[in-house]
Structures are given as structure tokens and as C-alpha cells.
Image 1 (cartoon, rainbow, N blue to C red):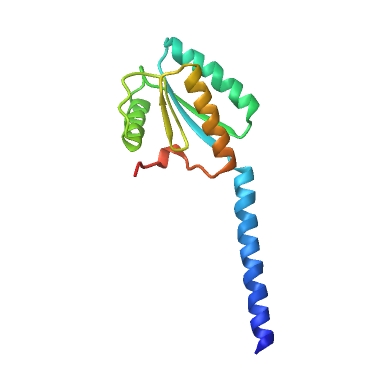
Image 2 (image 1 turned 180 degrees about the horizontal axis):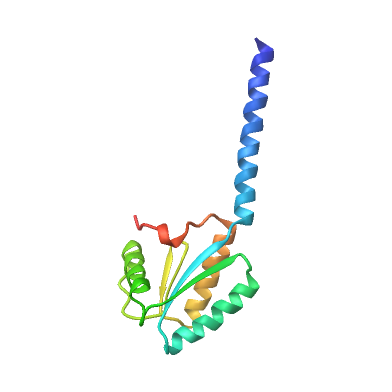
Length: 135
């Protein structure tokens, strides 16, 4: 009976270790998804595009999904749906979603906040913004 209990304890510990190792490996190898909605000819959008390209070089795990919304209806609907999920009502572009954060507009402060959120997501598990629902 004691041998069975030790075996059970050993197998439980082994399973817990395997589970934790798998989750750690997943966190280490996952991509961070950022959604970027912009408009053709928007100067703030162009500045953010340059910033995001530099972030992509600095953080290879960053995956940027960008959508032009001024001339394309489907991405505009996606922006509307995601904005509702985040509880925001953007009046213009650019609009950026990463982790549980949404950013409207672009300037140096927003750039810092985007990078801080990216760093946070690299350490923790951030869900795909497409599936985020504000609680």
C-alpha cells in the first residue's frame, strides 16, 4: 500500500512538472499579436507604421496584423467589433490593440505605452486581442 502511494505521488509530481514545463515553453515560444488599424494618407498612422516596424526588428516575436480602414469596409467592421469588446469609441485612426490594451492616436507617450505592453506580454500570457472581451 505504501509503495502504491509513493508511486502515485511520484506520478502526480511528474505530471505537474510536465504541465508547468509545457506552459513555460509555450510562453517562451509564442507570438505576441498586435492589431493596427490605419488610414491611407494619415500622417500619424505613417509614424506609427515606422515605429511598429522598428519594434518588429527589436522583438521578433511580435506579429503585426495591420488593416487599412478608410477604403476597406471589412477591416472597418473588425475595428468596430474590437472597439466594442474593449469598451472604446475611437473617432479616428490609428487604433492599436495589444493584450488587454487599446490605443487611439499616436505620439511618443503612446509609443512608450505600446512597447511597455509588448514587454509585459512577452513575460506573461496575453490573449489575442481579437478574442478579448472587457469584463
